[in-house]
Image (cartoon, rainbow, N blue to C red):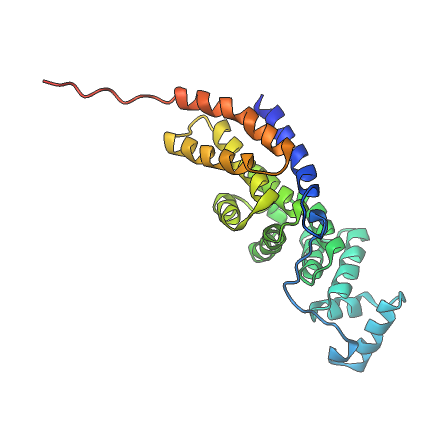
Length: 250
């Protein structure tokens, strides 16, 4: 039952976003966290200036030059270098994620999507803590902006605790900043997480009740339906809570 409800939530979250009245489709929302290199003139040498011009014209350049330009903050070069790494043998997954992350931080949506694909298959042991913190920040920045793919990823990563470890506090903080269908999707997820935990307390259930109220206010009929279906499960969980013994009157 719980597995089915989880599947329903994850499947219905995406179409709920698509119904948003926002001018940009939620899966296409981007975030520019750093300006990056926007002109070849910003590079420190003529060699790199020529290499960047060649790269933007679709010409082949040395991978060492591509990496240098990427490391200076050029999002396009970072994306191209990440693509090169992804196609190479024996490339470190954390390097691939790092350069996709750099490109995503300059507002490149395709790079962000590739970052999510990379993180989805990332072994936490292969992701150094410093890079993990940066990449987690990028994913959450996109989620806060309302990118539906980022929100779905945050929910998956919180459930699996991979590749960033526990994200309970971060997801709670994200919910406080979220609105609309982003808040609805996260609220459904958190309510279900509580209901699935056999050790939930009365306080936990009260929080789940608040989450379901947020989800029920969604404009999406599908989201409302899932929240409604979780209602009886919440009522049963409340009923199963142990009652304190009555005080004996002497």
